[in-house]
Image 1 (tube, rainbow, N blue to C red):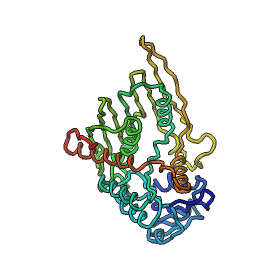
Image 2: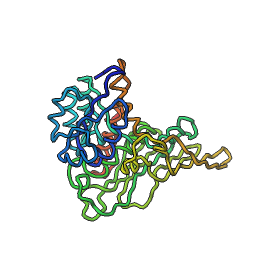
Image 3: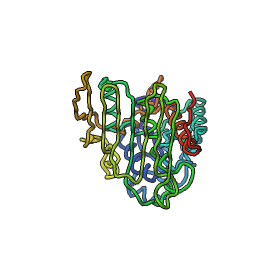
Image 4: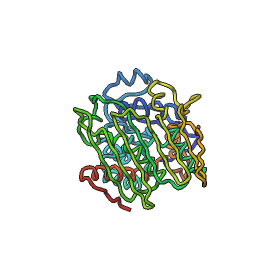
Amino acid sequence: MTTSVNASPIKVALVGYGYAGRVFHAPLIRATPGLTLHTVVSSRPEAVHADLPDVRVVPDVETVLADRSIGLMVIATPNDLHAPLARRALEAGMAVVVDKPFTVTLAEARALQALSAETGGSLTVFHNRAWDADFLTLQQLIRDRRLGRITRFESHFSRFRPQVRDRWRERPGPGAGIWYDLGPHLADQALRVMGSPVALSADIATVRPGGGADDWFHVVMRFADDSRAILHADMTSTSDLRFVVESDAGGFIKHGLDPQEDALKAGVVPGGPGWGVDPRPGVLTAVDAEGGRAEEIVQGPPGDYLALYRGVRDALSAVSPAPRPPVPLDRAVAVMAVIEAGLLSARERREVVLEE
């Protein structure tokens, strides 16, 4: 779908109004010029209208698929519905944004990639943490060559939630658990920094009593140059470590999470003054040839989740040739390859070699 840059705003349908739809997608869509949140698919219209009184609410996706005025479907449902809904939207001629994880299986991801190519449809995945303030800072340090060859990249995402909650993500089922929930974010970051791994080893576990889905993982990705990426998440941790990056010229350490999720939860309108500014910037340690060390607190660019939806809008609104979507499908598929390899490695307790 391509339209003139001066055309009317693109009408968006949001499918699902749980945590992801309510906290992330609805506010970001509404704050993006050129997009208008037109319809929400939800079985709880009263909850939607309490937040969004001007938005149409429908009980099923059929109404959306039949509405030719809607140009973009955003899928924020339980994970096992991502692939079938994305397929139906592409077949109906709609552009699609899928919340992470892209799909439940690598085969589903590849099939959607093929369908998108066949239909010419726009399809991207909500890997929003590529626009975290700390990750943008790290990428800036790499671009500015303030880090040398990276030998170890660690991405941590831990919280202290020792009680199992009654929600689908923490119950048994396809696509449930922390590896599907946080693994795609950490894998996406590792691929952006380190490139494609040759193999990985994964330990994925359920450590909380009564847990129905995995709530702990530790994954080591091995690269052709013998560098490593470590991905770790834990629901029973008091640590707030976020990044450890070591290189042959020094390192970067970051504690604390990007502030955008908490701001969205608090109802702050995205993009206003101070939006995304990291309250706990990381520390860069440079080491010279004589072993001298110099530490510097690095306040990088603010986080910018709106960049993802601006990229979606621009890809849909531009005249040909359209820009690439903000998360290219080849990267989204590569993330799913990591997710699936991690499951196999944990199940068989061995290192898994990834396809080239």
